[in-house]
Length: 346
Ligand code: OGA
Ligand code: NI
Image 1 (cartoon, rainbow, N blue to C red):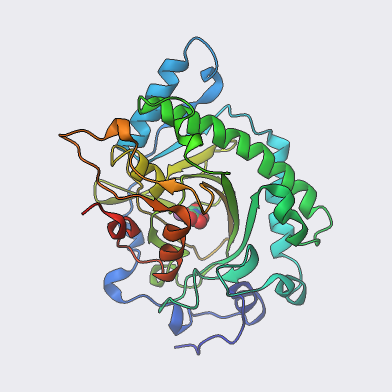
Image 2: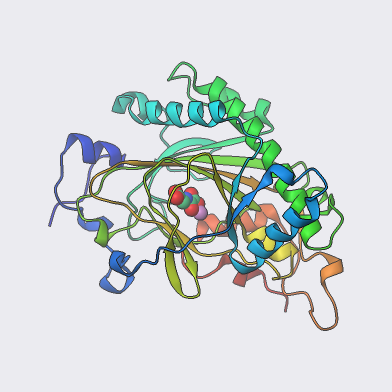
């Protein structure tokens, strides 16, 4: 068995040290391994947003509502984010992860409270087993509060990433409105609960892995935020839990994958579920995925929407601030147990 790595970033361990075995600190106990042969190739709904603003809006809203209720995940096509914007985003992420080690390490930090940081795995301060991933995490709304912290190499990084953030925020706001309506709430209801709103993103880099059945890019987890908008390259890796089975969601060009996070589950009083998903790795190809995490601001008070609480369906969760939830989530490690369990109404 190979020794524990002394490199800060996994990508440098893989590319420079040319390892042919997974180091011991990445190996999951047998019962927790991905079992890659037992994966289903089903799909998640693909929703055409072309008619979201037009006479067929009600039909699109109903599709979104069903997808949130039955899958917690869907894909969207004919969205408002230009292809050139997503192509530039993907290209700049690839260039960033190809920079020399010493250049990338300028952004390195293992402190999860930092608003711009390059790190590895998930939270190396709390986890027992490491994950096969490096990631650059950026806060990106309000843009002017954070853009000065971002990397300046590659030269166009800030320009392309800022353009992508603005464009994806527009899509997030459309989806939040649609989700509100699909719950029978005022279309501005969810948006109004988010304080000043927040937006974070990750540039995930999953290097090729010599023994992908022993480890994860990211183990099963739910997203703590409101909704996630995922851009991925053409290498498969995302899997979603459905009816007790892991389903591979293979990439479709020019679509985003949308999933409901814990905060929508709370506001919807469990009508919509924040679903477990994970990223697996493979022997041959690196993979890049770029999730945008749309979220409340830390001071926003989150709880079940009063209109969705009745005598028959009492409030499942208590009220809390998003800041409180965020802190609990990062401190507990990426445990499969839902963080929501800590916020149940008594
Ligand atoms: C995440 C996530 C999935 C992927 O970053 O929260 O679920 O395919 N990523 O990278
Ligand atoms: Ni996730």
